[in-house]
Length: 328
Image (cartoon, rainbow, N blue to C red; front, side):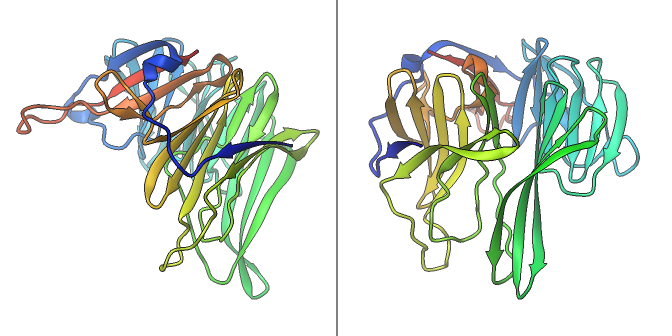
């Protein structure tokens, strides 16, 4: 298994322009009923930008003009009140929206197709070649005198029939504990295959640092990222080093992690075997740090979110800018 070293020190700031082939910025239109606060994810498909916030999905064109909200909000059939994940089937154009244990499917014209309730929570889903991959974590499963947080990878066909189950892990805890991250990019699919990294965010005095490849219905260790900084627990029992995401694109590994409550991005170029350990992310043309998140991993295409800054603070804040970046 290949091991990549991550130093304890950070590198000097790295310009986004120096590692990018192209950068385009899209100012999302601001309207009273489409004000965006926290953005969980962004998807790009068929010249449309899908922006996922905790409760709804907003659709914009490539000029940032607001088009519509996907589906209906509510507790009834064909409705959702919160979004845990969204995915688009690139072959059919169907859009899959998960809300806890429910999946709602829309067609490429944003019309309702079907709704399915599953017997487990859905934290993450991906559509590949007509198959549905779901990462699920069940919290607080009683295992003797301890509690287990159990993670599984489910594979379903397009009719939601179970094809396979791969146990990812069980974390044993003395008492019920929950840990989570708003940004989840747990499955990476490129020409080399399907890869998985799912963090453990309950207190542990170790680092979960391995990217796995899903192959022959098994998890195979593929890449280990060796942190020079050892893991410790602080006085409150929290991890001082938390690896949140490992994203695997055709040419890059991108790691997102927190250390001593500060945010870091580790960018590793596979072609040159060069790594950059960066505080808060890459530096844009305005001198501000931006954090790359995946759009199309086969094409080394990423996005970042940047809030629109006003000189006059009395003016209502605009919706953010979405930057679309193709790395070299």
